[in-house]
Image 1 (cartoon, rainbow, N blue to C red):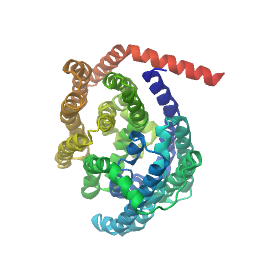
Image 2: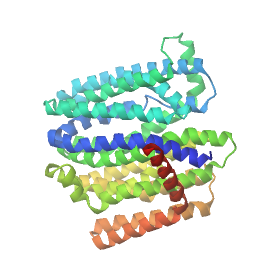
Image 3: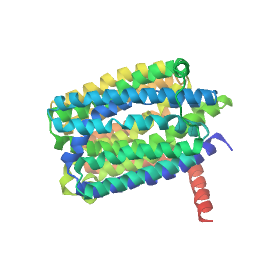
Image 4: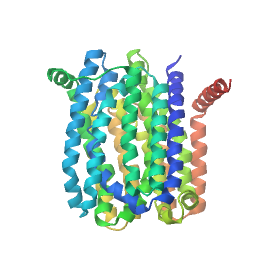
Length: 475
C-alpha cells in the first residue's frame, strides 16, 4: 500500500472515532449550556489557564522519543518511570499553585478545585508510554476506540453531574475519570506493566531524550502563554462572564484543531517517520496532506464566518448570543491554524527541535503583543487582533523559517500553495470587519471553489477510500 493510501486509511480510521467523539462533545455542549451558566464555565477556565500551562510538561517529547527511536522494552519501561516522576512533580507544583491562583484572582473558592484537578497529572502520566507504543505500531483503530469510549463516558458524567446541581464540578471530576479509564484500556492492550526501577534507568532515558525534552518544553511554554495570554488577561481585567463567552468561542478553534490538526498530526508523524526511513519524498506528501487539511477545515470555518448568530441561537441559546460576535474571527483562524499546527511534526522528524523552539519564541512575542493591544479596547478587539497577527505575521514567519529554510521546499511550491490562501483570508477578514456581507459570501464561495480545484486529485482518492470503507462496513 502506498504512503498516501496508508496515511489516509489511518486518518479515516482514527478520524472516524475521533469525529464521533468530538461531535458527541459538541452536542453535549448544547445540553450543558442549558444546565450551566457562562460564569460556571468561566470559573473552570480561570483554573485551566494555569493547569493547562503545567500540562505542557506532562509529555515533553516522550511520545516522540518512543516513535523516533528503535529501542525496546527496557527503554519503554524506563521512560514510563520518567513519565511518572514528571507527572508527580507536576502534581505537587499544581497543588502549591492553588493558593497562588486564589490570590491572583482574589477568589479563595478556586483553591480546592485546583487541588482536585492536579491529580490529572499523575493519572495522565501512566498513559503516555502505552499510548505512544500503540502509535508507533500504527494501531490507530484501537487508539480511536478507546478515546471514543473514554470521552463518551466523561460526557455522560458531565451531564449527569450538571443535572444534579454539581455546578463547575461537573466539568472537573469526569475529566479525571477519563484519564484513569484511558490508561486502563491502553495498558490492557500493550501489557507494559509498571514497576519502579533504579533511578539510573529513567536517568539514562532522560539523557537519550534530553534534546527533545529541552526544546519541546521551551516551545510548549512559550506557545502556551502566547495562546492563553488572552484568557489570562480577560479573566483578570474583565469578568468571569466575559471569559466564559470568549472561552466558548475559543473552544470552536480547539474543536477544529482536535478534529483536524490533532488527528492528522497523530497519524502524520509516525507515518512520515516510516516514509523517511524508506527513502520517500516527505515534502511532496506533506504538501499534499496540507491540501486535504485545507479542504476539511473550510466548512467548519465557513459556518462560523457566515452564520454565527444562527449557530449560537440554535445550539446554545440566547444566554450565549455574545459568542456570535467572536466566532467569525475564530472561523478565519481555523482555516489557517489547522495547517500551521502540523509543522511541529516536520521539525521533530527532521530533528530540528531547536529551530522549532526559536520560531515559537518569535511567534509568542507577536501573538502576545497582538492580544495586549486588543485588551486595551474590548474582548472583540482581542479576537480581531489575535486573528490579524496570526494571519499577517505568524503564517509568513512559518513559511520562511519553516517551509523554506528548514523543510527545503521551493519558493514556487510555497507561493502556489500559500499565497491564494493568505489573499482570500485577508479579504474575508476585511469584509467581516467592514460588515460587507455580500462580499463576505462571495469571497467564501470563491475560496471554496479554489480549494476544490487545486485539490481535486486528492479529493478523488479520499472519496474512493471513504466509499470503500463505508461499503466494507455495510457488508
